Structures are given as C-alpha cells and as structure tokens.
Amino acid sequence: MADHPDCESRFNGIYDQFARKVYAYFSSGFGPDVAEDLTQQTFLNVWRHLEGNPRMAPDSWAAWIFRVAHNVRNDHLRARGYRQPPLPYEDAIATATEGGTDDLEERIAIRTAFARLLPVEQELLLYKTIGMNSEEIGQILGLSASAVRSRMQKARERFRLLLEENGVETDA
Image (cartoon, rainbow, N blue to C red; front, side, top):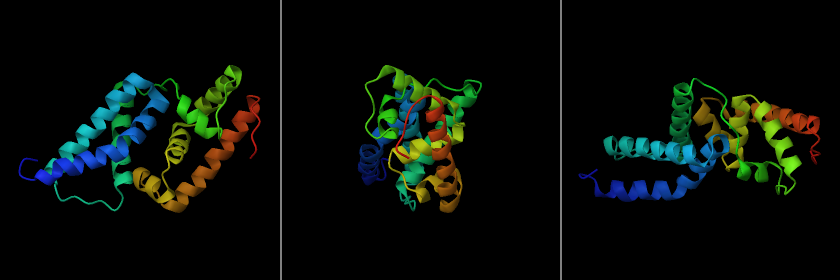
C-alpha cells in the first residue's frame, strides 16, 4: 500500500466502520478469544486484498466484508473438524429477545433454542441482528434478496417454535 497512501486511510475507515460488527458476528458463535483472532484474520485478509486492488469499490462494503468474514469462519470450522462451536453470545441474545433477560434459566433456554437451529439459520439471524439487509446478506451467501427473506422468515419461525419448546414466551 506504499504506492497508494490513501489505501491505509481507506482501510482504517473500513476497519472503524465494521470491526465491532465483525467481532459481534464471531463472538456470537465462538466466544471472545476466538472472535478476536477471527476478526483479526478477517481484516488481515481485507488489508491484503486492498493492497493488491487499491481502487476496489464493491457495491456494498458490508456485504463484501462479511463475505470475507464468512470465508474466515468456514476455514476455522474446517480446521476444527466442523464441530458445532459453543454459543456464548450474550449480546446476540439481548437483541434476539428485544431487550434481553437477567433470568439465568431463560438465557439457558434461549441458548439451547439457538443451538438447535441449523448453522445457516443461526447465520441468517446473526446477520440480521447486526443490522444487515436482505440484499447484503444475499451477497454474502450467494442468494437473491427474496431467497434471504424467505429463509429468514423460516429461521425466525423455527427459532420462535424452539423458544416456545424451551419455555420462553415471545410476542411473535
């Protein structure tokens, strides 16, 4: 990036805008230590790509960044033998239940319901939780926006049913 001094400031702006969301994405499935490592790997990959393509301008930076994060996540899961990761995701729980809960039993029930979702359902709900729209999620997962909305609706309904099975009442 030495030939393109604006690339460093561009990267810094991208990092400032997306680092917290990428960290939240990873911490929801892996816990804080692994999330930090995966976030660093994501932005190292972003840096390398920008270094080789200094004029790059994707249609959606959010979708592009999270596509990189998605690939880092998949590489990490493959390296672990693709076992389901633990789910210490306090922040995602608070958002998923619109306000969270201080009740330990309810938090456990919510985590249990979330853990029973398919990985793709978990991922869809997490992307939505961090504020991504259907078009951005579709770009990450290689789906149309309408397919994302359809799958999101099914994931939400399945999560709601699993919550009810675990004794958590929802207003949906």
